[in-house]
Image (cartoon, rainbow over the protein chains, first blue to last red):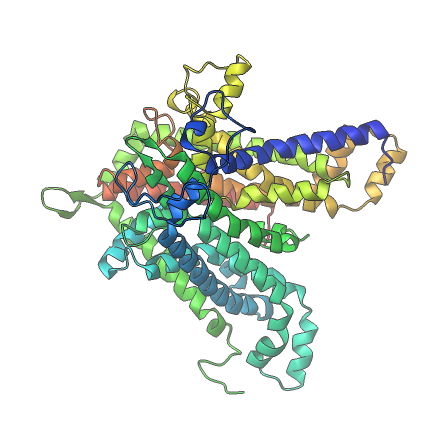
Length: 294
Length: 291
């Protein structure tokens, strides 16, 4: 290992902390806005460290009383809309969970075959899956909007779940394939010699060995569905909306309710933060669609 | 073991659900989109009418298309370079075990899971001309005055949007490059040290070549997403002020859904699709990226 002087180590430590602080600052500031009263948000110079925290924004957005701060509930807020976001959080959860389940199941089956079986055009098939990842969402959303309109799938859970599953399939297939590729083929082959069927080998031997990989894939699919914007914006109207899309309703003609928006945003980030911490080990592999291993 | 159409020994059986999804949601929409690009919605007839090549001719003659194409490419080049360079610099900085660096690497992952639309809102607030933190910092330093709103001035609006993108995705590069740096073999570095090579030479001649595959993958994946970027401009500027921040994705979305130009919007989105497929596949071929 390279030996470094004390000064350069101190400098590196300070620089590292400073850089990461710069990246963490916007998140910190957003969090303070979620806990600020209106007047303090609009202060000049902006109040960064000293402010009086309140949970009013959370109470308003979720229609609950947290027992301190402002107890009084306002049903309709300036701008006239209903700002209760509980149902929208539920929409986000339903869509993210079900689309993840669908994408991971389809991808696990397909990537097992792509990893284990030889057939003509296998390489082309992988390229096809990868090129699906390149399609601009808008080039999918426009035709799918009209197709959904004819099939009455606009504004339905089914419609959004299907399109989110599709969006995550390239990631899920390529990532799961890389996890299957990690398992030595000899394991399958020796079980095959013993007379086990493909399906039995998959169910009983290989699948339990990629459990960690399935979890990592599922977490990433969940996060990408949770944060997706364009498809939900295009394919839903009033029936359902996920958190990223509904955030814009806080922008009204009489001004933006930054506190409420920040409260919703902060609440929506928590599950994603917790999930990403669970998959640190496989994160880079996931972000690179299985091609860079940690 | 039963040998039949649905035998588990046939790869097709395993891939059938995937093939069904890909056909239903990429091939069918693709052909529908191509069909749509030869039609246009006629408001008086309230239906789509066949217009032949009209949309495609309009596409290449449309100055706003070329402007948004230019904006997309400029955004693509600036943001991608900034993220690669900053990502590499920060990865090299954090690639040691100094005090708390494990925690710092964890904190960096957090920007990746914030919905980009909400990041757009965050930067809308930070860059607000009345009470934004960035406005305050810039005006305190005398770089920019409060009277020039970042996102409402044509010359600065795109930079304001780029800032959000660079903030959110530089950590993506950092994490990938860190993983790459950690898998490098120690021997070349020992040899370089014995030869008395400078830090810059070691980086240029050893680290960069050894990292080329990792860098190529990161550039490809990030490049695709930057090219088709939509969320930030949609929430931060909606293409404005004027037409200064229209990207191809936003322009085609708006033609379809705001101006009811269904056929022209489809044509624009197909154009964006062709451009990204060409760029990405050329890159895959040139950089020999393999999956």
